[in-house]
Amino acid sequence: MKDTETKKVDKRTSEIWAMNLLESNPILFKKLKDLPLGQDVDPHELLTEVVKFMYLVSAFHVKLTPSLMVDLAWHEFILFTKAYERFCRIELGSFIHHTPDDNNAANNKNYLKTIQRYISLFGEPPVNIWGELSRKEWRDSQCGSCNSN
Image 1 (tube, rainbow, N blue to C red):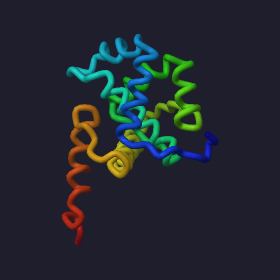
Image 2: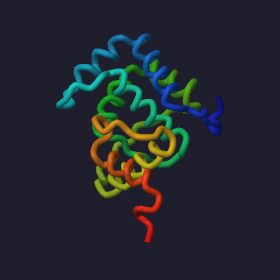
Image 3: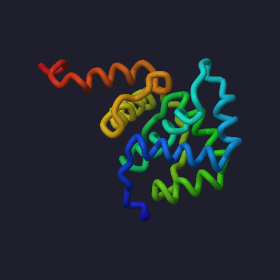
Image 4: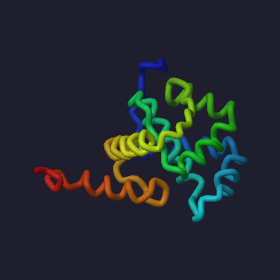
C-alpha cells in the first residue's frame, strides 16, 4: 500500500489486527497485562484501541493525542520493533512515529480532536480506556440539535 492510500477500517478489522498481533507476539500480551493502569483492562481490548488510534493518525494525517492508557500500551507495542514496523507498513501504509509533546494546551486540543475523529469512524469509545471526555463527546455527538443556537 502506498503512503497516500488508506484502508477503510472498522471495529472488527481493528479487533482482528490486535488478535493477530497478540497471537504472533505473546510477550506483548503479558506486557500489556502488566501495565500499571489502576484497573483491570483486557490486553486485547487495549491493543485494539492502540491500533484504532494508529489508524486515525494514518487516515487523517494530523497530530492526534491518545489517552494515557492507549499511550502506555503504544509504548509497549513500539518495543516490538519488527512487528511494529511490519504492522505500520502492511496495514497502515507508512510508519507511525511517536512524537511526545509537553504542550498541555496543544495535547488537550489534539486529544479532543482524536475523540471526535474516533467517534466519526468507530462510534462510541470505551470510557475505561479513553476517559470521561470520550463519554461527553459521544453523548454530544448523538444529540444533533442539543448544542445548536
